[in-house]
Length: 534
Image 1 (cartoon, rainbow, N blue to C red):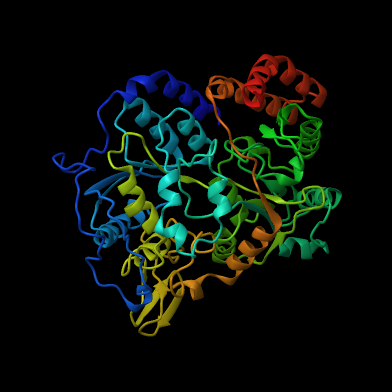
Image 2 (cartoon, rainbow, N blue to C red):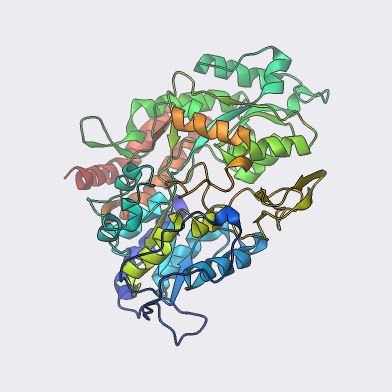
C-alpha cells in the first residue's frame, strides 16, 4: 500500500497533463483505430468442440464493434508462459476483434499501471484492484459505464447470479468498472496430521488457536529430531499491502480493521485508532515474541509462505479459498507429505472471514468507443458459451481438450474417452494440470447457458473449501478514495506499518505504539474524516 499510494500522488500531479494527450490504444498497426466501426456481429472464426456449444448470447444491438481493443492486465489472465498466445488467438477468433494484451509482470503490475497513467499512453481496458479502482475513478480516469450495464443483454439474461456485487462497486451511484466474478478471500488451513500428532481438535476460540500454534512451535512436528525448526503460523507480512489488509492473520486481528470504514451509525471512522487495533497489536506481539509466528513474516512473500508450508515447517497458513485448497494439497502430496488439510471455521472472536472487493475491469476515459468495448469485451466474458469457456478454462488443445487421449503429468497418467472434457498439463509447470484461466468457475457471476463444460473436473476439495468460504464470509468494507485520501495515504500507511513493526517486532509497548500513531496521524486523520463525513 505504501509504494502504490505514493505513485497515486504522481498520478494526481500529472493527470491534468495526461488527459490532454491523444487517445490511447496504439496497435500493432497504428493505422487502425479502436473506434473504427464494423457492422459485423461477433462471430466465431474457429470450430469448437461440443463441450462449448451451449448457446452463446451474441450482442443484438447496433452498438459499433471496435476493430481492436488494447488491454492491460495482470497475471490472473494466462501469461505468455502459460499459453496466452493460444487464448488470445481463440478470443480474437470468437470476437472478431484484435485484442492487444499488455501484461506486466504480476509482482510489479501496479508500478507499471501508475507509470502508464502518468505517461498518457492509456489502454482501452485495464484490470484494477479495488483500491486502485476507487482512486483512478476518483481521479476521472475511468469511464462511467452505468448505462451500458443497465441496458445490457447480460443483465437481462437471467444468468447473472448476484447483482448486489455490481451495486457494491458503484461509486456515488455510478459504475466505473465491471467484475465478472466475486472477490474471494482467505481461509485458515491447518495440517490435520499435526493436529492428530498432538491429539488436538480444530480450535474454536482464540485461546485454543493460541495453544495450538504454541504446541506446533514447541514440538518436533516434522520428525527431524529438532523441535526448533517448526513454528505455528506464517504470513506474507504482519499486515496486508492492500484491502482487506487483515486477511492473512485474521485470528489476531479479529474485530480490528486498520483503515477507514463506515461505522454502524453511518459515519466514517479510522479503524487503526480504535481499541480493537490495540487488541490486535497485543495478540500479534505476544505470538511473535514467543516465536509462534514465523520470524520472517515481516519479509515473506506469499511464495515464501507456500514453500515453508510445502516443506513441513509450519502448521497453519491462511490463504485463498477454493482452488488454492486443491493446490496446497497437491503440492504437499508431491513432496511426500500428508495432504489432508482442515479448513478452519472462523473462531468465535473472528466470526467471519473477509471477502475482498473483487478486481474490476475498467474502460479508461481515453477509449474512443467505450460502449462498444463494454458490449463486445465485457459482456462476452460471461456469454454463457464459447467466450466464457475461454475466460474460464482457456483454449482448446492448449489448456483443455475433449479428445480421446492419455495425459501424463508428473507421475500421474490418465486416459480420457472422446468427448470427455479434461484439463491438459500446464505449459509452465508440466507436472501439474491447468487449473483455470482468469475466471474461477467457483466464483463466476454468471452461469453457463448450458452445463458448465468443466464442472466435473473441479477438485472436490476446492469446491468444498469455496462453499465453506462463501458460507463463512462477509464482504470487506467499501474502499473509498478522494483527493484528500490520495494526498495523505502514503504517509499514513508508512506510519501504520512503522507502528506495527515497532510494537510487534522491536519491543515497543502497545500503548506507546498507539500514542505514536495518534501523535503522527491526528491532522491527517482529521482532514480525511472531514472529507468523508462532509
